Length: 265
Image (cartoon, rainbow, N blue to C red; front, side):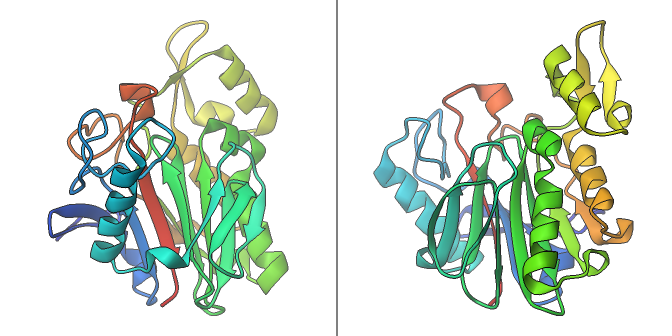
């Protein structure tokens, strides 16, 4: 097991590899982010693809999900999930199941294992240690514009009385500014949505800019009231690590997907 300077630990068990958000797990929760290693899918889904929408055999996807759940230590049949639509809707997961179209889930106690799938977008794990309340959010550039991170924080506040300043957050591996070039419609949407857009955009030419997705989500969490010291970015670019991570931007429509999960034992 190795840890980067941001507190994210790489772990392998039985050939399955994943990251653990150590700052959150110190409070006794599970907070994990899958890699692409240790599954049964052939190229281009090799090998631990957990997404069912790209064309992989559903039986292989099911086996991959089961392998990851066993290795990481959560009950797959306890999973709560959403059909992600790049918005800011938040669902309260009182039990396992499919909660329809949304991009964030919240829960408390051991009601459910919260899960999302990503292949460049950020998975944001949230924890209120005192109330044992958890949240999980999926946010790409559209989620930043819609403020999916802030919506998840406000849902924890309004539902469980969580103080945003007392929350902890882990932003998992996502596409980095090194590999994420966006065009004018994206830059215009960002500038219309937030005052700090230019802090996360690095111009390439008159039309294109590189976009720092992880930093944008961090700034959204700060806007929502989190303390800077309680936000932990993995700092790992999905597109830069084809040996460990899937990337839609790098691999196209047939890219696999990684599962992120958080739960309270």
